[in-house]
Image 1: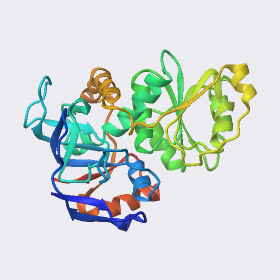
Image 2 (image 1 turned 90 degrees about the vertical axis):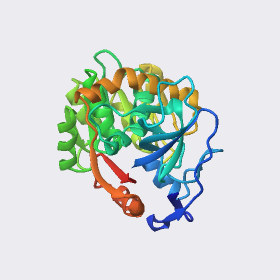
Image 3 (image 1 turned 120 degrees about the vertical axis):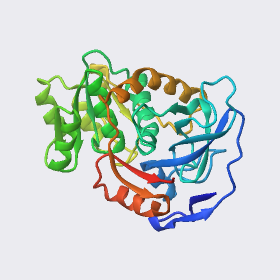
Image 4 (image 1 turned 45 degrees about the vertical axis):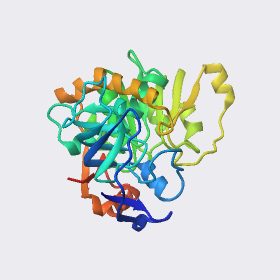
Amino acid sequence: MKAIEITHPGAPDVLQLCERPMPALKPGEVLIKVHAAGVNRPDVLQRTGNYPVPAGASDLPGLEVAGEIVDGDLAGTSFKKGDMVCALVQGGGYAEYCAAPVEQCLPLPKGLSAIEAASLPETFFTVWSNVFDRVHLSGAETLLVQGGTSGIGVTAIQLAKALGHRVFATAGSDEKCRSCEALGAERGINYRTEDFAEVVKAATGGKGVDVILDMVGGDYVSRELRCLADDGRLVLIALLGGAKASADLGQILRRRLTITGSTLRPRPVAFKAQIAARLREHVWPLLESGKIKPVIYQTFPLEQAAQAHALMEASTHVGKIMLKVV
């Protein structure tokens, strides 16, 4: 099969088209003929040598795909050969064929193309797991999304809004802030020209937000604690701004704040299967009704994966960058 491999750690041009053997399936896995794959920030980190591949995972980049089941272990499942699915995978998505745990597969939401469906797994699994399962955003609580125009950001804004929450989001330009608002954010905050903590406090009558979804870390953390409401929760999913932070621990004690975080890729299949079940129950109906829509910024053919990574690193996009395989 044709695939894109990382020839050595480095710039986007280290991504090269190659020929690889077909994936060998493990028990509980299916073989997907890939129609489309998503490009995500962890792919970039892997390409630069900053995200080790989990033991047993493919060294090929790509954490989400959509396509046709052509083989595999389908016993006891609702799937059959020929079904179109999207799937979260540990690697191997930048290829014509990809192995996926069947429990991490979901049917294509009705009305969505393969490109649109392939944009869903990585961000929806991540947002649901962290915002709703880990820190339990619920009721009338409010959410601040850092990086509102990223793939994670556009997912978090739309999902929280669709479930009845007030949402605020940061972005790096006024134009991107307007994009966040068009997706459902009450207020887009330009982090280059505004203090997000002050804006959030003003917009919430001094209370602050209940939950913050952060992929920055670093010096954001101290400011995030300032704009959390009492009993607020900060959940970290990446550390683009650095792994070290200083924080006023007294605030955590006095106001019962929580700082937590997680990475999804190394978690076991059983854990991800639970998320898949919740997405199918709670989120797929929202996608099929059009209350939530995939946000696709640009699609590249598989052989132009390097250009897709260059666009990702330029950070000019709003939403998902995709690879078309078939």
